[in-house]
Length: 432
Image (cartoon, rainbow, N blue to C red; front, side, top):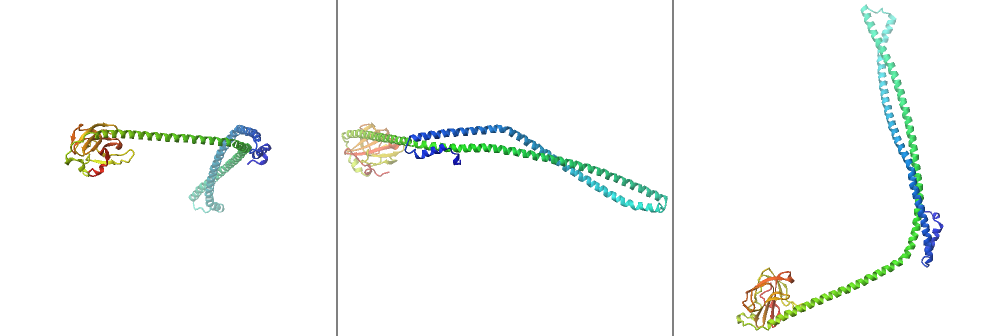
């Protein structure tokens, strides 16, 4: 956080005005807001200046970074060279160890020769050849001694050469070690210089960023105070706008509900009107049939005696719409679902009084059975009787067609007595 003493006095005064005067007076709010905006503008300028300074610092330090890169490459080369020197020193040490071992081996051989030669040398000095038994023996001893002396001389010369080589190797090793120490000192010195550059680079960047962060925190405080003021000034306008929006939505919803109910009422009235019109036309057609003279029906074929035994108009059918005169619109007959092309047969002896289309029922056949009984067969695919023709019970009068309410093949069947629809359930042999 920014220390309190770093916040300008005018910012503190503006904040006090914001907290104390804003709720009551409008003019001080404007002045305080103006003062805060000026402070924010000044702080933004400081932040921008520090940002540019940071960028400039990065540009200026680009050269230092190049020097640091070059120095790191130099250190890497020095370390590589130092590793080579250390490897060379190790090789010289191995060479020195090998020479030292050879010198020791030669000295050991020389010691053995001298131990053998010394007693003979002492004997010759004391007896001066008196112990020799013959000239041949003396000659052999002389030749043997000469060979030993020669070999001793060779070993002595080997030791001198090996000592010289060993001394040269030790000098070479000392030189390599001194050079390696010098390279190590140079590497350490360059590393110290590189570390110093990096620390200085980080210090300068940290100082600029710290100052920039301080200014940004100060700017955040000023902007927060401005936002608080603007919120208080804006809140009332937003509330009124929300109230207006809600009022508008409520009015639109009320109008939409009124329109929906009006449309529903219109559709319902239209449906009722069409139903009434359809019912009236059907009733007119039925009334026309009832005015026709009843055919002469033999007693054995009279419908009155078929109650409960009347055959079904189709052999294979399922009741999907039942008789219900109290429904709206009323169901004055039954709807049967059948197979397509199913034969439709007369339920009793009668006379054809209608074999044509009837609006709302498709192709229709109406039979009058005497005693003021009528049967109606609707939604036929085709009719097979003529107007005025008499038909027997079970005679095919047509084939079943498409029944709209069942959305498939079907038959609408209706029974009437004295112009009033009666429930076929009481007349048909059994319900399927």
